[in-house]
Amino acid sequence: MKRLSLLSALILLSACQGSNPYIADGKPLPAAPPDAAGHFDSSAYPAPPRDYGRYRDWRWRQQPAGSAWADGALVAEAVGGGLDQRGLRPVREGKAADLEVSAALHLEKRQYQVRDDYGSYYGNGPYGDHYGMYGSVPLVRTYEVEVAVVQIEMFDGVSGQAVWSGSAEARSQGSQSERADALRRAVTDALGAYPPE
Image (cartoon, rainbow, N blue to C red; front, side, top):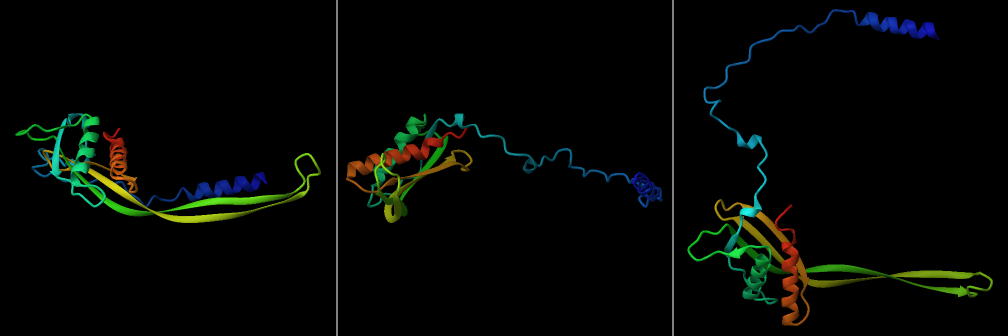
C-alpha cells in the first residue's frame, strides 16, 4: 500500500515538471487622462451618515388633507405635537426650515384570525382510575377591521431630498375623541424611530 501511494505521488510530481504555458509579459499602464487628478467620483464611496441633530425646525411641505375619519386640522395638530416631542419646532416666519414635513391619513382594511380550541374530557377525576378520553375542536374565526394609517415623510429643507419616513395605524372605531386619541398614539408610534440610530 505504501509503495502504491509513493508511486502515485511520484507520477503526480513528474506531471508537474512540464513546461509552463504562461509567460510573464508586462506592459506599462496607459497614461492617466489629463483631468484625472482633479476629478472625484463621489458615487464610488458610500454616503456619509446623515446628521439628524442639525435638524431643529420644520414647516409643512403640504398641509395634511382631511378625511371622513379625521379632518386635516386634527392630523396637523397630532403630527405637530409628535414633532414637538422629538425636539423639532415649527419654523419662525421668514426663516428657511431645516425640514419639510408631509403627512397623510387614509383608511385600510385588515383581516385577523382568532383560533379557539374547545375541548372536553370524559372519564374519572384526577384521583380515581385514570382512563378516559379527551378531544378538542379548533374554531377559527376571521374578522375584518378598518384601520386608519398615518404616513409621515420628512425632506431636507435645503436639498429637498427625502431623509426619513414612518407610518403607523390606529383602529378607526369609536367616538370622535377616541379617534383623536388613537390618531395621537399612531403618530407617536410612527415617530418612534425618529431620529434613526
